[in-house]
Each structure stands twice: as C-alpha cells, then as structure tokens.
Image 1 (cartoon, chains in turn purple, red):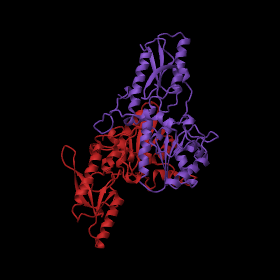
Image 2 (tube, rainbow over the protein chains, first blue to last red; image 1 turned 120 degrees about the vertical axis):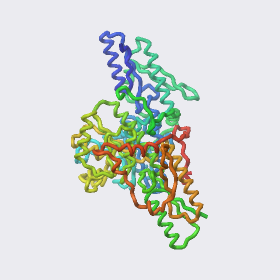
Image 3 (cartoon, one colour; image 1 turned 180 degrees about the vertical axis):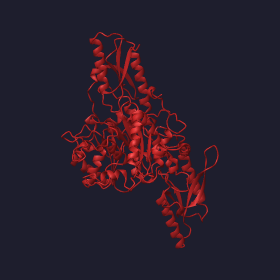
Image 4 (cartoon, rainbow over the protein chains, first blue to last red; image 1 turned 30 degrees about the vertical axis):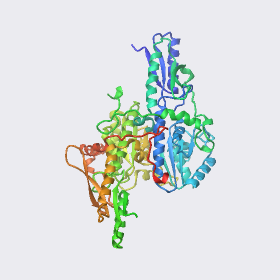
Length: 304
Length: 304
C-alpha cells in the first residue's frame, strides 16, 4: 500500500528520485510518487540555501575547532594544529569552522593547493605567534588533480592508494620540509556527522519542517520527481521557506563553496560567509540521557 | 606574596610537588606550601579513586562510541570500526566506552596484544553480525614491547618512527591480512580531552569541590608535599569524600586498568568495571553559547 516514497539524501539520491519517477512515467505506472528530501553534511546541493544535517555537523566542527584551539594554547611551545573535515569536493564544512574567529589558515577543495604559497603562510603565522591552526578539507588537491593524501602515498611501497588523510599528509610535509617541528592532527572522521549531542536546534527544527513540507506536498498526486528545497526569507531576522524543485535539477551536480567567499592566501572567509553560517548554528536541542550517562537515541527499526 | 602553590596535574606534576616541598624543607624555606591537585584524563594515579578530568573525557568517548556505532549500523555492509583513545600506559579511557554496551572488542595497553587471538575474535564477530566495533588504546603493545603503531612503521621506507596511531596500524593489518575489506578509524586525539561541551556534571562538581578541599587543607601551614585525593563513600548512593596523601606516594607510579576487570579474549569489561564507570558520567552541566553558536568559555589569563 505504499503510495509515496520519500527518498532522503544528497546528489546521488536525487538522481534515484529522478530515475524512479521517470521510469514510472514511461511505464504508465500510476499512483506512486517519488519525493526527494535533501540531507547531507556536505551542503553541496544546488538551488537549496543549505542542506539539513549540514548545520549540526558544522556546529560539532566549530565547537571542536574552538576547544582544541584552547587546548593547544595551554602550551607556549611552537605547534601547528591541523583539523581535517569531510568534504571531498566541497569545502562548506571546513569553511564553517571560521565562525569561531580562531582559524589561521583554511584549505578548501575548491582551490588548487599551492604548497609553496601555503608553507609561506604557515611560516609567517608561526613567526608572528609561535602557533598556527589549520583547517583542511579531506578533498584538497594539487594542480594536477591528485589528492594531498594520495600524493603522499604514491611513493609508498605498500601500494596503498591512501594511507592517511589530507591532515596527516600535510603534517608529514610540514615536518619533513622543516616548516615546523611539531604538528598535531585531529581527523574528525565519522564523529562530525554523527555527534547528535551537539546538534544545531535550527537544523533539527528545519529538518522536521522540511519533512513535514515534503509530506504536505505529496498530497498532490502529480508531485513526483521533485525535491523539497528551502531558501532564506529576506529580512533582518533569519527565517526560511520551503519550495519544490525538479530532482533532476539537483542530481549529479556539486555546489562548491563560493571562491569569492574565501580570503586570499588561505586566510579564511569573508564576512558574507560568516553571515551565511552563523544563523544556522544557533540553539541546542534538549538532550535526554540514559542511565549510563550517554545520550538517549530513538532506535532505528532495524536495530530494535 | 605567594604563600601556597597549588600544582595541578598527574604523575609528573606530583613529582614536582614532592621535589619542591623537599627542597623547601632541606633549605629551611618557611612560609611556602606546595599542594598537589590531581587532574588527568588518563585516570592513572594511585590511591585516588578517580582523577578529575577523566569522567568528562570518558563521557565524550562513550558518546562518540554510541553515535559512531549508530552511524555504521546505517549500512548493512560488512564493516569494522576502530575507535582510538588516549592512554599510553593505562586503558581507563578505552575501557570506559564499554558503558554503552556496544563495544565488541576492547584492546588495552595492560594486555599484551596477541594478533592471532585478536584476529580470530574479529573474524568470529564479523561472521556473527557482519560488523565489528573495536576500541583500542593508543598505547597497545606486542609481547616484545613495541607499540602497534611503531611495529607497523618499522618496515616503512620513509623512516618515520610512527606514521599513524594504533587504530590506523590495526586497520591496515586487518585489511592486509584479509580479515575484512572495509575498516574505518576514528582517532579521538585532542578532542577527547578538550570537548568541554560534553562534560560530566559529576566531574565538574567534584573538580570544584576538590579545588576547594585543597584550599581548605592549605590553611594548615604544615600542609605541604601533599596531594588532595578522593575516595568513594560506601553505600547505595554514589558519593565521595576527600583526604590527603603524600605527593610522593603518587609521583611516578602508574595505576593501570585492573586486568581482573577485563573479560577474556578482548570481549570488554566486567560488571564491576561498569559499576565503577557509570556513576562518574552522570549529568550535563549547563552550557552557555556565544552568538556564533559555539560554547562560551572562560578565557584563561594568558589569552585575554
């Protein structure tokens, strides 16, 4: 008796929504609708202002950035700290950490990695304050298209394509080339997309509202092959509204972090970028705790 | 006009308290006291029931364990997940993640790493549920005393002593030896000791009370070369009381996780261990947030 399939995800998922709805149309299959619901921490979908899930991952990252920055400032010694975020093709997550105002250098996958320029920047910042805090996106590449991490492991006798991530590769380069003698890496890995105890309330509420909007849209039997999107409402107070787009407009495109929002020489982001990020990270949902001291979660059906 | 020096830290710090107070005694320097205040996420101090700081780090780790476990269960594919915790010599932090009941295998630095036995356990668990969640302490060693991570890099043509951590080394071994084809590592690095947004309220309150106890003890001019310790009060309801020990009783000793609390074959910890951990992780302090959505922190004097 399933009449509507809500498909939740990113670019690939919207491609599936498109294919399924086209298949149904071509084969005159009636009475079934395919509705896309955007959800990706990468925030790399076109048309939509931002993707549910992104703001919470950004909040975990910004919180970690701030707290590891405080940690490395406990010591007066020279130290480079490298925070590696997700984002193979889009630097939204990495860039969002700049809301703390504590990021010295930001390396985005949208920019070709210029090692000499970058190392000069690291040296300059170390000379100024004996420390340098770097945020790097996992997908950072050289001019020839190779990943920073892959570039390192090319010489590896084990034959692994990628040994460590971009952060680890950068750390090894910085030490080998004598830019610094001490560097630490924090690879955020799976934690950044699953640390529900640090969600953004704005994100949680918008995700719920988006799901509800998809549900309401689905009352129209012709609503298929569509994704529910959201945009900001103009005005002084942050607010959003929902609308619908054809899922094929979203599928298989990647919306990168706008290069005009990145400052030159890896020095972070513009005020316009901060104005985009900050409203998304607001509010902390109430968390219920289990007797063992960890957050309580709704159990997915397949784990009951 | 400094009369009392409160020295906060672990084993090395208590050694400093001992040395300074002995120096003052030997040189007849009067009117100055040296008081030790325990604080280490490693939880490896003798005599004291648990160390301020430990419970909060344990809470971050347990929360991450649970949430990354939920994340990897989204997929039905075979997958090994490896969470690496701090603990070069003591496995308290790694062991504490077992409060969630979701840890399949636990590798402690107190036990010699038996690769064949361990790999058999991984195979058995994968055969049973297609997945295996491993928690490993950074300080895990082979029978000959070499670290898991160092053992790996011995064959490395780059000549690095340690390329990745224990988790990364374990991942590479599991894949190279065909135990699994897919393994992911979450190295908790600096985050686990600095993620103040996920502190244990019990820890925060006890830390404050311990500081106050140290302050009160210092009213006695003969109170020097001592550390303020805490023990559990007998009874059904968790509570602690403070007492004093000579700092030389603490200095340069390491209290490992008791092996009688570890289950055979890396299968986690006993109920007694859980009964030890669970009361420590209780409660969530109220967090104040800045306008940018990240937690507000008291600025240390050197950052003002």
